[in-house]
Length: 87
Image (tube, rainbow, N blue to C red):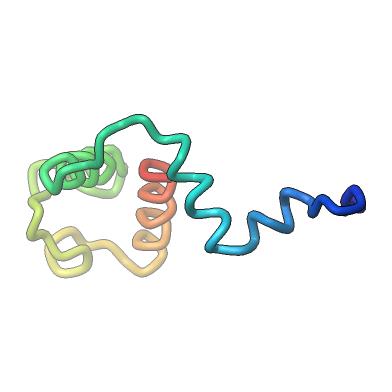
């Protein structure tokens, strides 16, 4: 890591502090907050794109293992896809 200038801490070090990083991240967003309906639509959209899920069987109440036949590795892939979608 590059040394900080005297009297000025390095930005990466500051961003590791949650009380500093969170306000910085929030300050750049100009979009209104997501509604529950928006979140549900985006989650279902991401799930429908997953090749192991039959879109016809997918509902908001679907159980990954019981209804959709997914295993634990599929669940990890879905979580990563959700992280990509929502940041």
